[in-house]
Image (tube, rainbow, N blue to C red; front, top):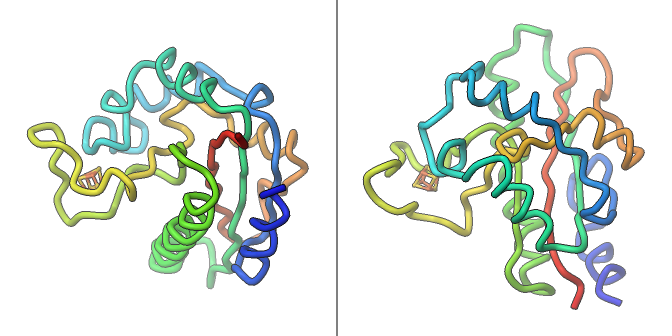
Amino acid sequence: MKTNSIEDEIKNFPIQEYSFFKSKDVVFSDEVRDLCEKNTCGLYGTSWACPPAVGTTEECRKKCSQYMDVFMFTTATKMKNSYDVQGWLDARKEHEKLTDQVGRVFRENYENLLILSTEGCSVCKSCTYPKDPCRFPDRMYPATEAYGILVMKQAQVCNIKYNNGQNTVTYFSMIFFNRS
Ligand code: SF4
């Protein structure tokens, strides 16, 4: 049973909370993806990790449905205050680094994963999108929102805290995999 060995391998990682669940229980919402299309975050069409490059809502759901299992985890980082922009950026960088580490553990155990993480992609200083293919497809994690996943509700379903308290930023990543 590989789940136990994964739990052993990640036990010293700075993960706040995690959950294993079935991909049939992923909470999709057209409204989440609509916000992407309205470019509320300013990242629409700026990288291979965001719409429209990730595919249509239907294509994203179809990709997720090709997996049976999901691992979701969070990091929670204290900010100096609610205006601590640098703290927020640093927390995201650390979360993405951890997503790389957790992804490596899953890749050692399972083939052909789908990894989703936080807003857009910040791996390269300048993205190749749309002219050339992604330079690092294994490190390019589309945002959960780009796939139309309602993280707030998903957290409830997984019994994971969406918010870890005042002046704390909580980030989520999801790894889709098949056990066999
Ligand atoms: S890894 Fe680089 S090329 Fe690929 S989506 Fe991210 S920024 Fe763009």
